[in-house]
Length: 246
Length: 254
Image 1: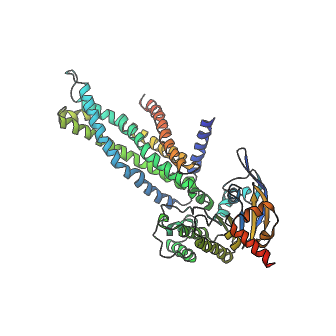
Image 2: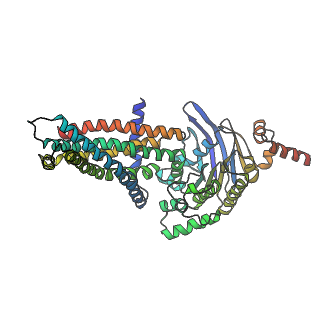
Image 3: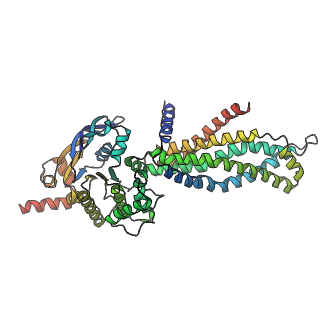
């Protein structure tokens, strides 16, 4: 019953969020600010993770297929496939759920306990729309850029580790990256990214918006935002993979 | 004028307010007093529409708030200004942007006109040359004054102040009380102040409603308050030795 209550209230919140905005220009200004906060400021951690994960994928693949029957370009091929299909869209989204999701829940939760949301409601502002919509739009616009950057950096990290340690030649690695490339895999990854961005922003916002109590509860909301958005992302990942790839 | 008729509010199994009926007059500082947990903040939140009561209604100039449609509610909300206990200024906006916020949301004024209006109300509450500061850089008293400026910037008809003196030193409290009283008279607003500060009641209270255990226990003016023989009211107002001294002095004068 409790789960049904939360699902119902989540969808009612979505309805509030997508009610016509009072002042589009102000919403757009806030969206740009959120794009910087949620997107641009996440680039560093995404870049760091991607380079190292690409390097690790390359080294692990190479050490596991140490056979004369398997051509060495398979290392580049595996790095590319792992990165585009799963690592960048899903794992980076899970990381972003931690960074961005907790940020969203904490910010909105603090606004709730400090009565700033009440202040908006009393003024007649659609508080859910004003606070949450820019975050959703910003996440859905910025996350694809983050994920595409992650794909390039992860494949580059793999090349760096492979060539740097001598486990694969630059030519073989690049041949593997280009081998049997299907553009739809990128489309699939970007569809997942946009859906995950929506999940991160809305689940975290839901947790923050309905925070009750004080700073302790803001912390609890922030933790719940990360846990629940991760769970929903994993379920959506399975559903989308089955829908789009099979 | 705001009227409350037979208002009751429950949270789950807890009955917070029971059958409250009261009138809050225009151009006066109306006060809701009571002990912590008596239900006065919940009453105020029911009046401004943040909580929906289970029974009863709230009338703004004779119009029932809860029967209004979305647009009518939005319209009336633009005539309501509220000063919150913690000021509730938006952290990410500067002082000027905070005060301009309601105008930028609802008015069709140009940016320069909005700035002029914001400066006008900021000057009225004695906040000068603080435009670019963020709320965190202001003292508690200044935050309250900016909160008042934001509350009155839209030519407010109804001003709500939730514990305006909490966290302030006595001198600043008096300044805030005087400011609320002046603004009420100047703009002819229906002002409702929720407080348990007896200094504030004695300074500005003109129509005082005492809430006890979620019920309307007593209503009257300052003079009647001091002379009331209501036991619970007396326990509340004469809890401090200062107020007991006031009562003693009054008796001696007679």
